[in-house]
Amino acid sequence: MYSFLALKVFVAVVEARGIKGAADRLGRTVSTISTTLKQFEEAVGAPLFEGDRKNRLTPLGRLVHEEARDLLEHYERSCAAIRAYSANEVGHVHVACVPSVAVALLPEVIRHLRRAPRPIEIEVRDMDSVSVTEAVVAGVVDVGVANGTSQMAGGQFTPLFSDPLDLVCRTEDPLAALGRPISWDDLAGRVFLAHRGYGAIRDPRFRAIAGQAQVTVRNVLSLLALVKADVGVTLLPRLCGQPNDRALRFLPVDDLQARRVVGLVERGARMPSPAATLFAHALRSVLIEKGAALGLDILCGPAGSRAIATAHAIPRPASP
Image (cartoon, rainbow, N blue to C red; front, side, top):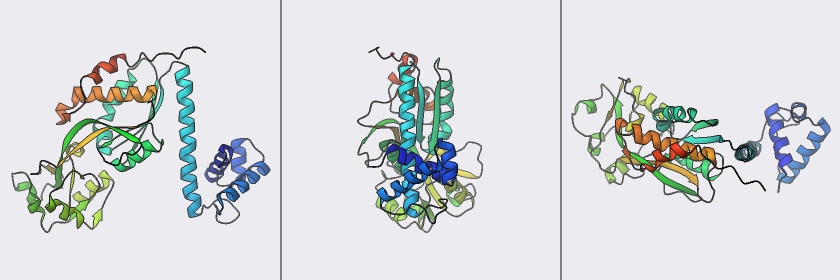
């Protein structure tokens, strides 16, 4: 078991690039920082730094730094949530979501939250669905918005909306001139750029196409850039399309399974914070108001829009 102080000292040494800087940051003596760091390395059982200057991490050191930093951030968020709740405030919410939601929906969600009578701070990370789920389950973020996944051990998935997966190609691509939904047979001989967002499609023709892909890209912006550069074609949610982007076409696919379900990802055994609850209500409200115009099939009921009106009335904890 590693002490909280040891983790805090280690992270400070890494970020200050040395023991002296860490001592200044933490208000401790150089001797105290050096001794604590030495004891921590001994407890880990392997070197965390290369050399004596403590400014270059070993591979193990990089792993320990990432885990320790996440743990300290989680601790700070938990403390902030406790303080905010005890002061009858909403507080801070750390959100992870897929890029398409971050671009198309979060601006309006944030506008909703800014109208709330109580302040709320929002920190957003965009990442792919698997990473969103992992971040929520690990406690790195408070709540996530991601594609539905069966890998939800320790998490809870609540569907919000569904949208089609489209074939993305350049405007000049012959596929764009077909004038009909794209068949998987149309992709024979084409370079397909893969990612991890189409697990619901079971057609063996598509599975063969995806299985033979030599390029896998996890970032949506990178995928779109590669398609624009005529490297290949890909499959993305329709919500990823930008109306003013004339260089790309999002073409419907002749496969009813070519859809994704997006939902709220929460830790299964943990009550959400007031800020996370307010965020979820705001997101549902925006979906109900704007979802149809974006071509989304809304899966969350009208309770979300009613809840946003009462979400500000978070009860103050009883005095001991």
